[in-house]
Image 1: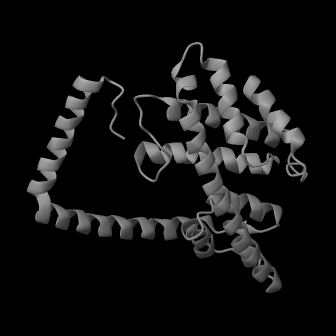
Image 2: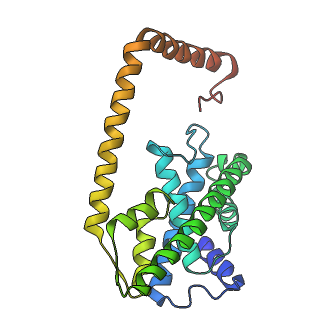
Image 3: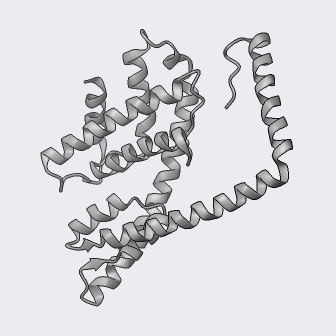
Length: 236
């Protein structure tokens, strides 16, 4: 409840009127997503044993998706940038009596949230500019469908989420070729896997002994640091 109340307070201060075109159910869904994702992201970033930061692989990518989805829905309902830090503070106040690591690591958590939110907002600004240019060209030629290729270009080149393309297209009276997007995405992933596999194989052939020694040495060093400094010495 305190998180939801903070979200409502941040919406009231938004001056651009964004979110007014949404139905009450859509606003409620957005508020719930923001609250859930920001609570989860705050716990992950404050976990003293986790070492997870926003990134492009594995758990780091999951965290990035959580934060960016919260940012996307915040923009939809008219919450100004900088909200992630304020919600992290609410999460900390709410749970720190049970999880003291929230308060201990809040400063670092806020730095990570601030950086990721700013990075994604820049991505969204560029993506929206490209989207508006695409839509303008389509309407000039009497077309009502965004091709899968264009949707994938927005996603791959500009980092613009496919879901946002669909949402904005619907409000502009357009449709999106999802099958075409999926096919373009599939081909891109296949190419990436082929390229990565070739690079990885070559790397192992050239450096397998060196890589193995370094990997083992890293684990030994980490174990030694634990013995000398204690369990707070974490590999990140």
